[in-house]
Amino acid sequence: MMKNRDNKTPGEKMYKKLGVSEPVYAFGAEVEASLRERFDRVDEVVEYNQLKVLGAMQENRVSDIHFAASTGYGYNDLGRETLEAVYASVFQAEAALVRPQLTCGTHALAVALSANLRPGDELLSPVGKPYDTLEEVIGIRPSKGSLAEYGVRYRQVDLMEDGSFDYEGIRSAITDKTKMVTIQRSKGYQTRPTLSVDAIGELIAFIKSIRSDIICMVDNCYGEFVGTTEPTQVGADLCVGSLIKNPGGGLAPIGGYIVGKQEYIEQAAYRLTSPGLGREVGATLGVLGSFFQGLFLAPSVVGGALKGAIFAANVYERLGFLVSPDGAQPRHDIIQAVTFGAPEGVIAFCQGIQAAAPVDSYVVPEPWAMPGYDSDVIMAAGAFVSGSSIELSADGPIKPPYTVYFQGGLTWEHAKFGILMTLQRLLEAGMISRGQLEPSS
Ligand SMILES: *Cc1c(COP(=O)(O)O)cnc(C)c1O
Image (cartoon, rainbow, N blue to C red; front, side, top):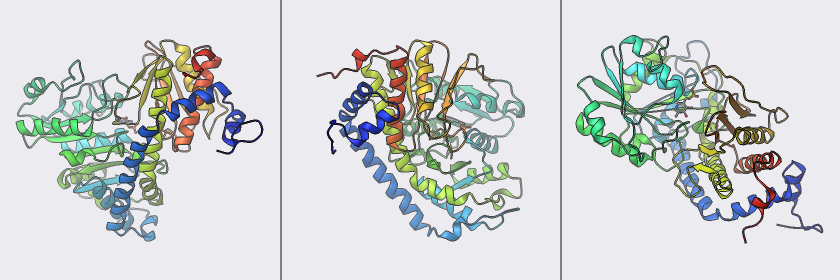
């Protein structure tokens, strides 16, 4: 890049102007330079997925008439039907339900589960405790309207110490009442590893070998487009996620998706709207353009978020902090955990992410007693779409081991800037020293 008399590129000057000091910038540049090959592999996945999405749109003859708004009942919403056909094609599934009426990921999962389970049935999680909000959906924590209240029983088999499946435990947990299995791909906010799509395929094959009629559902949140295959391609009967995460590409203002076998998607539609109405109703109110365009951008947005996660892992690993996944491990979701061992680290990190935001950058987040958590929590989010976690965001509970969870970034450049701002804040808070940022050679 062109340098002028003070030996700085325009980019370096801009970083300085926005609050990133020279040693932080130089340290980031050194880490970034070491990641070229890794980033090339991310780009290859982005390229593949871009073509996959484009192909699905062409094959389904997407046209601008599909972006029109429907109102009222929303009968014959051609755009909605086409979008659902595009999703089915991207996921190589028989059918899809992609709606603004699916208010978030939790809701989409709750619909998929409650639609396909009946009183007396059993639900099994063979991968340990599910995501926090699912505990209430299932009724692991007593909750109004939970599956437990409707007489659905729940069993859980934890992963083995080394993160592998407890095949014997799973075999003995499957009974003649087991109707459905729920498999969470992402580790979420736990310490277990995220599952690869191949590992999910092996697990599903094992379950189907015991009873082929068990419905296998995958919670795909944060996993979409991270690799070149999705769980529906390795035997998942249902695959579920949120549009304010990966597949919405940052543009979808709301929504969830459920893809999979025709018969289970139909059940989900009757549960989402009403028996008798099913998928025929559900006005789209003008959001379809953003659903289509967000899906189109999603592969590239996810690629940027992945680079940000890989960069963060390598930056913080080099500084001696525990990171998960580590700097070299393959990725199956976009979440990065960094453990600071002290509350000041979590706080400085989140304040750095907030300071890097395009929206509400002037706000300084503080830990607070959020309902539903057993400790104070700090959250950083300066997003265009409220609560969107495909946008650059971070949060962490203020309790040992003081781990922060970081994800998103609509562009790699923004994710990089965010990580450099966290470093800047940690430096100012005395959590790292200038000496640690010195060049290694
Ligand atoms: C985010 C998430 C959910 C819930 O999605 P919301 O949109 O926040 O309701 C469920 N499971 C996993 C693994 C998630 O990451």
